[in-house]
Length: 357
Image 1: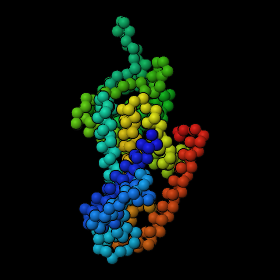
Image 2: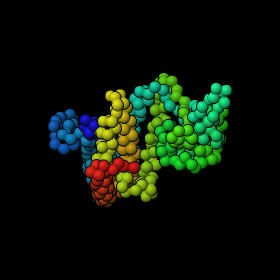
Image 3: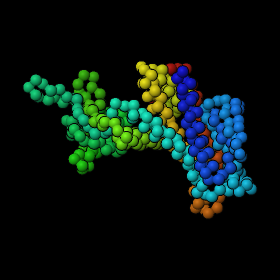
Image 4: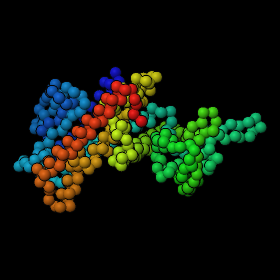
């Protein structure tokens, strides 16, 4: 069941992406030859005007085929003959719809929570004796953090939501002091040598709680926006690690690994609501990831095509279609190779039972 859900999530994300291209192409007057939901053999197809609408067998993607995307075309309504600003909007619209889907998913996610989490400190790990004496187990309190402090950054990493806090705590050393920027009484304050460590029991780095706001339309939208910023931030950090070589080749994962992760998270959930929460969370994270990755200036991706649009803007004339086509072909071959390698990693992990990270 989890695998079916994962495939449907991929299908939704890609279809929404292609719908962004489709609707903006239509609004821009660019001729759309076909809009397809799914890939592979056709199940249904209906022509309406100049566009064919298809439903295909494999629910793992889709596409929007426009007239004259990759070649010179005499049709005045072809993609390459459209005004430059229209082409830029059409190319960006796919990722834009991924971001819209991600934000909608996060609004649903926050609405399911008991309260809206913030990055403002509520209380610290502590005990109160019968005589009123307070013993703090939270090293963050002992090293400068206080109640009602709003955490802005830790070691230069911007903190937008509790998702960023979890990301930092998952990677930080409890025995190392950190540089923390907070907002206290309306002013930004820098703290040096802050330790995140609970000295009671099994310990751990999480030694304080955060304030949760009551849910209303404003707090839900604000909380969703904070989570959206966190996800884009974390995806950006992951991409940076990948290109800088900080990410080991064994950590590279592809669609098989993502499907496996979604399947595991849903099947291990204790209730239907918990499983639904996990599905919505994963959908938001993946669609934001897809949106950001597609905007990278890599040949073959929307970002690569946008790069050629900006080159045209500077040169005041387009690059020859055949030259641009060769570059995109090379990029697609490279991406295909990376995908094969990532899939190989995923399969090895499934066979050996070794989990990523």
